Length: 345
Image 1 (cartoon, rainbow, N blue to C red):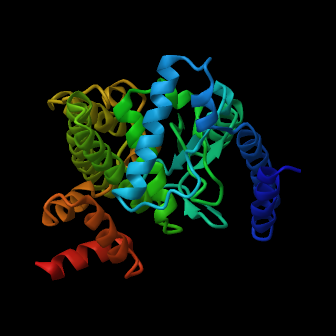
Image 2 (tube, rainbow, N blue to C red):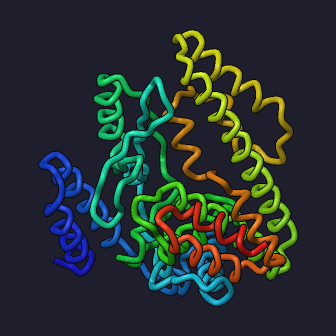
C-alpha cells in the first residue's frame, strides 16, 4: 500500500466502529475513490518545471500557489500540505452530493459519520450511485437534490490536491475556492454544517477580494467584489423564501399551493438586480425543500460574519480569529458569535 491508501484505511477502520453495514459499504467506496485521487497527485512545482506545461495551466497553478501562500501568511489559515499538488480527475470522479428533506416541513435528512458528525448530505464519486440513492429517498417520500461539488476538503487529514477540473475556472473563483477549502482545514465544528460552510463561504469571498487587491489585480478584485455582493444578497433572499415556506407549512398546504410558493420564489429572484450570473440557475432548476435547504447551508447568516468584519474595519485575519474563538465558546456556533458581538457593543 502507498501512503494515501494507508491513511484512507485508517479513517475507514475508525468509521466502521460506529456505522451500519450499509454505511460501511458507503465509506469503503468513498475511501477507495479518495485513495485513487490521492495516488494521482503530482507536485505543482514539478508541473511548473515541466517545459511541456501550457501557459494557461501554468498561470492557474501559479495562482494556486500564490493563493495558498496568501491564505497562510496573510489570513493565518492552516494550509498544511494542501494545494501543493495537482491531481488529474475525470468527470466521473467529481463528487456528486445528495441532499434530502421532508416534503411537508423544512427539515433536512441527516447522516452521521465519524469526524464529520451529523451532516445533511452524502457524497458519491459516481453520479449513477448518487442518483440511485436519491431515487430510493424519493420512494420514501422525501424531496431530494443531486448536485456536483466544485471541491471538497479532507479537513486537514490528507494533503488535499488541486483537482484538475478547477483549472477551468476564472481566477477569482479558483482563489475563492482554495481559500474556502483551507478554512475548513483551519476550523471545523462537527455537526454544524451550516456554520462550517457559511463561514468558509464568507472567508473564501472576502479572502479572494483581499488577495487580488493586494496584487493590484483590479479586474479580478472587482469581479470578486461583485460575486460577494450577490452572495450576500442571495443569502438574504433565501432566508426570506425559507421564512415564507415555514409560515405556509405551519398552516399546511396542498401540493398546488406548495408549487405556487416555489413559483413565487422564482419570481422574487427575477425581481432583484444581480451583478453577476452566479445564481441564475436558481430560477431555472426544479425547486423543492431539499434544494432550498442544501443551498442555504452555504448562505446562513452571512450578514453576521460581515458585521464582524466591518467592526474590525476590514481586518480579515482578526475577523477570522475572532469568529473562530466566539464560535467555539458555546454549544451553537452562530449563537456564540451573535452573543459575543452583542457583548462587544
